[in-house]
Amino acid sequence: MGDPSILSLGKIGNLFCSLSDGGYIVPSGNGVAAMKDMQAQLEKLRTDAADCALIRDLATDPKKRELFARLAEHLSVLAAEVERAVAEGLSKG
Image (cartoon, rainbow, N blue to C red):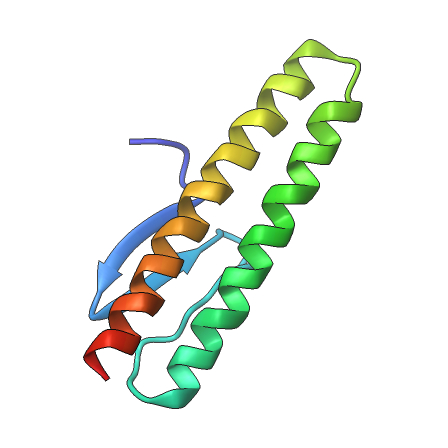
């Protein structure tokens, strides 16, 4: 299993994404408020992925470039998972 201080993704009822510092939290629950929270987290994931990609492109140190490339990819995957969960929630509701 990867380093939990970077990112973790698990399913407990609704989608739950977290950073060890509490950066991403999609509270479990039902209804419009939970869907809006998920939409907000989706936007944050996309923005953070774009920021990591920019840092990757500007980095001169190969190790930093590799790190930010991995972070950008991981955040993009998480964004896709949240987007899928939102779409499933909309189709069920």
